[in-house]
Image (cartoon, rainbow over all chains, first blue to last red; front, top):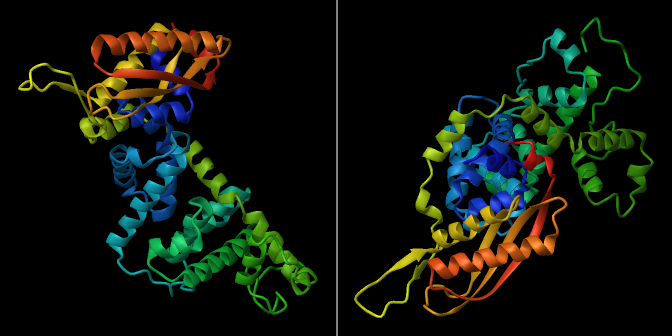
Length: 187
Length: 206
């Protein structure tokens, strides 16, 4: 493949690139891999709150995407479609490690990761958010990531995590309360 | 707080029902999601609820920003990662339907895959400088020899190229290649230029 062709493909929008990939063009699929790996890794890392399984989860997601391209109705929406797939794979991974979600883990004092010197660095909203997210108990963190990053409804979260929708809503409220209070402390 | 260095603040958000004039954070979340409709005076007139609503609103949209910041801070995707993914996929998974060639001898069964035909269509882009073919669909029963087929092609062109001219060139190129390499009965070739790329992306590279 010529450099010029590769560069043109890199510049093309998702509808073109994903459209080619769906049709079996491996070069176009490689462009999608380069384009969305960072975001899919980031999502998985936030979901698992660990780095160890991230690459395996993202790889599984891409393999599934390639197999199931036929289910993607609109190639322009490939980004959110890939994020849904990686989200599902991450949840699968969580279930494999921890079959039951402990919804009562809420107020177990989460280890505080931030030291005073780090707190100074995390004043910016997004950084503070990321630091607070790491401190959340698993169930709250998973609900928050599915809702705020994955864009899932309460019902969808409930289905993913195998809990009632009201529990999902309650966990989300606790997560938000913790993050608001924690970020407020750092201001 | 027991931290001696903590500067006392007039408002410390706790978001407990006592601070929210009897409302819960769940209720306020629902209220925000309904666009604050219908208006609930007991929420709108409560300073504690207003603080909590403001805090919830500040939190909105930060999730997407967080992931974008994480992704931006991540190292470049290296070639070995791409190879690892590509090594793990089945190349024939996207072959599509089987398209038979018309044969006078019933004992001879020849055909090509839909995926191969799509590859043939994509290769027509080489004859039109700057053009990239996206998705192409073969509309019709390609498994029946002689069935009328309509072809729909998405394509990306370079900024400044006359669209109609580009589309015409691609159409005639696709038509010629399909006629030479398949038995498909092509009724029409519809081309949609859905994407325009900057010229620099094409000319920067030698």
